[in-house]
Length: 120
Figure 1 (cartoon, rainbow, N blue to C red):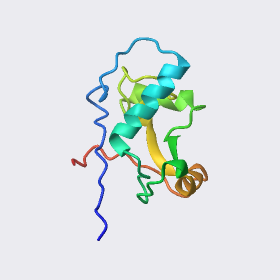
Figure 2: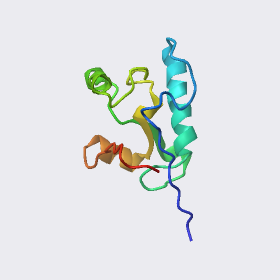
Figure 3: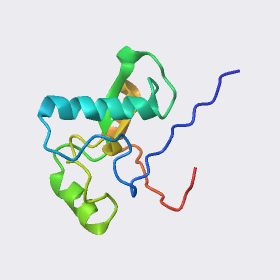
Figure 4: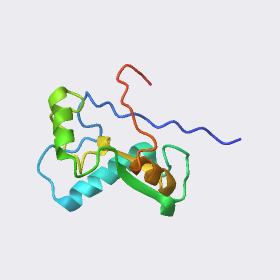
């Protein structure tokens, strides 16, 4: 019997779940914070299938890094807190996926839906 893993959700409305400050960050430290935050939540598992071999896992952005406008629009409408870091460095904009599920996600074969009314 395989143990079921359920990821711990980020509460998008209560600020930064990882406690790092809101000061300006370098690209390297921003990437490290992004990956550390996701690894804390998702562990070393694909959030879709549970694949656990580190070589086959990637840190993925839900909103692509090039979509700064989409990120800002989400902040303006309240889906993302105003205090959230940019689209590239915010761990709440990331998930851990295996190579297969990353390719399928990037090809828009499935999507992620935020459901604020669902409480875990």
